[in-house]
Length: 188
Image (cartoon, rainbow, N blue to C red; front, side):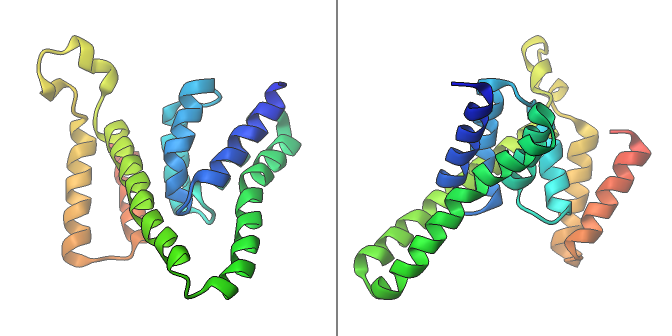
């Protein structure tokens, strides 16, 4: 199989099985990074930060980026369509079928079962992002204490922003702007 078709297949599978939206794609995108090396985990983390501050889900932004990096403009379009196509197909099928099965115990059971799975995907993604953002896992092997693994500036910024968010409940844009300004000032 050509690398281009492999790229389309991987993003198609991500779009098909990442139930729950943009954040649910993160475990799949992490696996693609590890398996093929088309982008680094740091690239993924950067894309998550960009995606959370721009319109569009993480998976769409990442597929467009990777397709463009590997195969140019049309590669970006093709990878994006590969990711979005399953969702469009599934939504059309579900919308048509849901009308006739709206009160079905089986359909309601399926949705009840999917909700915890989606939460699990999102929690897994959050843990992965925390590890990348707050820990220096490359340094872990050579350091005797856990203190050398923690990225202290990032952990302190996280704690302060979490406190501000919980106590003052500012708009998320305010938190993003503060984090960006501190990152620039402290050269993270």
